Image (cartoon, rainbow, N blue to C red; front, top):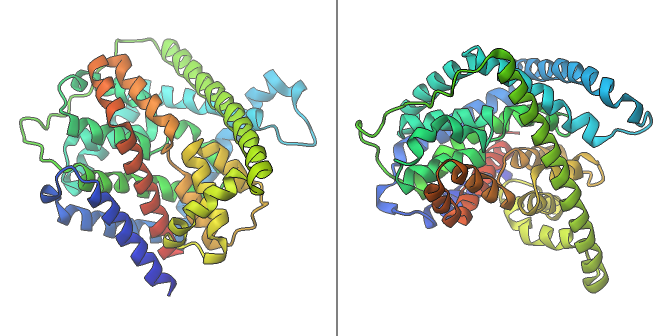
Amino acid sequence: MEYIIGVIGLVVILFLAWIGSNDKKKVKYKPIIVMIILQFILGFLLLNTGAGNALVSGIADGFGALLKCAGDGVKFVFGGLENSHQSTFFINVLLPIVFISALIGILQYCKILPFVIKYIGLVLSKVNGMGKLESYNAVASAILGQSEVFISVKKQLGLLPEKRLYTLCASAMSTVSMSIVGSYMLLIKPKYVVTAIVLNLFGGFIISSIINPYTVTDEEDVLEVQNEKKQSFFEVLGEYIMDGFKVAITVGAMLIGFVAIISLINSLFTWIFGMSFQDILGYIFSPFAFLMGVPLNEAVKAGSIMATKLVSNEFVAMTTLASGHLHLSIKATAIVSTFLVSFANFSSIGIISGAVKGLNEEKGNVVARFGLKLLYGATLVSALTATIVGLIV
């Protein structure tokens, strides 16, 4: 029965994407079917096979070693402020982002990341039936981040029609930055983080192909990535270190604000209605959680976490899940965890439109206009990934 519900959920998600399509007659179904099959294969390999478990363990161990090194730097600066009896979220989870960002800068300087991103993108373009630029951007977004990625394609921004611009922005919102993946792994199981990143990459193409179908001609399909001005090694390193610190501070500030506001709203709703705002959101989202494969008796609690991510951000939702107070089953935890690994929330609309506007004001205004549709598509990507995981685990 649970598989029937999961298949129904999958159909509903694709139908919701089709309902929001700009041009239903131009949807290319063959690449979509191929990518859905690939999602199932990759998800199964990552979650249910020895090779997949070994790969995820290797990645987790790698990030664990990096976080340990990051901890040495953090302790040198903040060691006296640490509470030996309690984990400090900012120090233990957010500040390691600075070190991971520095490593990304080194790989970028050595031309390793541009090479990997470009050629993985070219391979993906053969599978997804979309342009090379869209494929490049999706891979780059998963490494560089949802705002930084647009710097590498700023030459093309002014030339892109609205449909192609939507796909680029949807990829940025559907993925997560490699610099904060280690922080996610401290809150939820690494295997769910890795699986979500891989499935979201294809899910972004699937949903965008339905909501925003178009054909790119050979003349338009030119992959020319912006070459930044030549910088010395230490200039690049310093820039990425500061970028990582800005991300950590920004996420920390948003957490303070969102958690405090949610606490205030919960108190008001409890006083007026006898239940918290998150409980009410849980009831609203529970049918969707159920269709994704969450057992019915856990759907309200799972729906509450999913809604929290949408209205605030993934870190707020992950900390709620990591607290252990909800006592979700393994299946529900897998579904919710993979749903949370993306930037699909209201604040990302402002982040992405602001990033594009900083490079091209006209295109930034265009992004702001389709912001809600962007969030709609990115949320469906998260739901698609979660539903597939629910059918696999």
